[in-house]
Image (cartoon, rainbow, N blue to C red):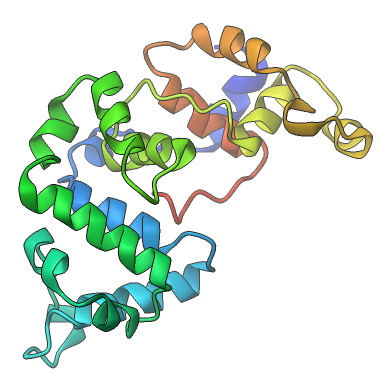
Length: 218
C-alpha cells in the first residue's frame, strides 16, 4: 500500500466492503427505486418521499415501521397520479414505474443483476430511463457490492486521486479546466489499474481522502 493511502486506510474502516457488509441481502429494485427518488433532492427530502411512496402500498397498516416496500408488479400498475401524491415529480414517477415494469416482466431480475457479468448488467441498466452512467456505477458498487467498479466521472474520486498523487487541489480548483481539471481520465484509469480487481474499494478510499459523504449511497 502506498504510504499516503496507508494512512487513509488505517483511519477509515471500510464497512461497506467488509465481510459483514458483503453479506447483506441485496434487493436491486428497492435500491434502484430509492436512487431515483433521491436524485437532485436533499437526503431529508428523499427520506420523506420514500416513506410516503412506501405508505401508498401499505394503506391498511397504521404503523409506518411495519410498512413493506412494494413489489414491482404493484408499482407497475398503480396510476401515475397516485405515485405523484408521494411527492414525486411526473418524470420520477414515470422512471420508477418504467423500472417496475422491467422487473415485473422479468426483463430485469435480482438474480441476473447479482450474478450476471458486469458489462451485461451495465448495458441492461443504462437503457432504463432515469439511470445514467454514474447512477448505474454507484448502484453496482453500493447496491450489488461489485468489487471492481470504477467511476472516472465522479468528481470526488477524481479529487481524491489528484490529492493522493500530490497535486494541489485548491490551485487546480481555482484554475478551472473543465471536467478533468484535477486529473485526466487516462491518468485515473492507469492509477486505478494497480488496484484491480478491487477498484470499488480503492474508489471508496478516494472519497475518504477528500472527505466526501457517501452515506446516501451506502
